[in-house]
Image 1 (cartoon, rainbow, N blue to C red):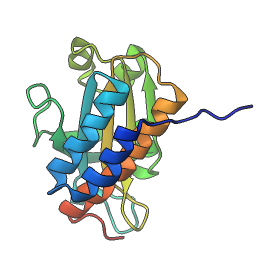
Image 2 (cartoon, one colour; image 1 turned 180 degrees about the vertical axis):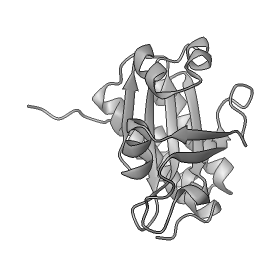
Image 3 (cartoon, rainbow, N blue to C red; image 1 turned 45 degrees about the vertical axis):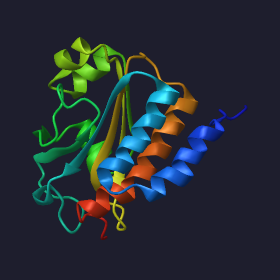
Length: 183
């Protein structure tokens, strides 16, 4: 079986290796990452949420019933403004992404409806699939999420690899600014 190949144009590589390290803060870094995302993956919504401090205990378990998230960056401030908060009940999604720190991929409107309370707003924006990348601190705990919703119904393996890569590149900016990078 052959592996999916992730090929990036030279301009994208230069943006990520020359512009991103010189970004003047989290917002500039995420704008650079979002430009790459738009060039390579097209239309969609990119948001970054931090996990509330009360939701993460020293053992990484935190509150057993809910987790609070706060949006710290968005590519669409009109639909999903910075500062928005939500409490997520303990579900398979919260356990996978926020507790175990594992990538979540949701494809199709049924998957979005199952996971997100605001699935009607998401569908209204023409978004049909999501990738949530956990941003982990030095101790391996999920402290933030890098969330990409796309107009496609299914993600190709190379697209998933790119979203994960962009999330990993965003992590030091998000976790450092929020003071969440310590393990």
